[in-house]
Image (cartoon, rainbow, N blue to C red):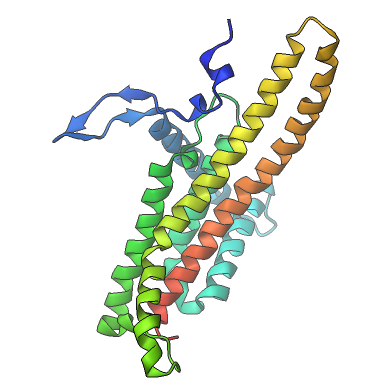
Length: 253
């Protein structure tokens, strides 16, 4: 008998509750997705602690990887915001590592991929959005609202441009969350389908089983692509976070 997971590629994204818990009618249950995120945090902390515990002038492999990751995101922050943006480097670096780690964990069979859950990506996007707003007002006061007033435009156009700028600003957490969620979800579904086609064809007691080589080859190729996507989506999220933070530092445009 074919299992539910085998016939339904969406089954892998269903949340399984480990601890059913509700507070004031709000479901705050501890799920397998929560466990996966905690596992990623523990693994990343362990790797980083080992990498920097005994730093050497001539770094070893693990220290080199840690330093490369540090410089990569640090340069991204400097290039996007400037040197003053380095105060948010820990925030951006943490987001990048967390999303990258979650994406990579999801490439292991039978492991959850929390970034394929819209609630997770939405929470991260809202965190970035609120950080931009709060710091924008702390640093600039009311002048932060200049973000919605394009400089140099004829004043009659402001009646059109200002509403467009406001809509564009408040839609950011939606696009930021959907971009990450959509790419990870779609990639995993396609990969799951290729694997399903392969196993189904191999199970046929006929010459058709030979055709299984084609979806199997496609699955291997797509797996390699998904590893690249896992990195790119984490990097894109980090870059867009820097771009949005830049508005908090420089609201005039």
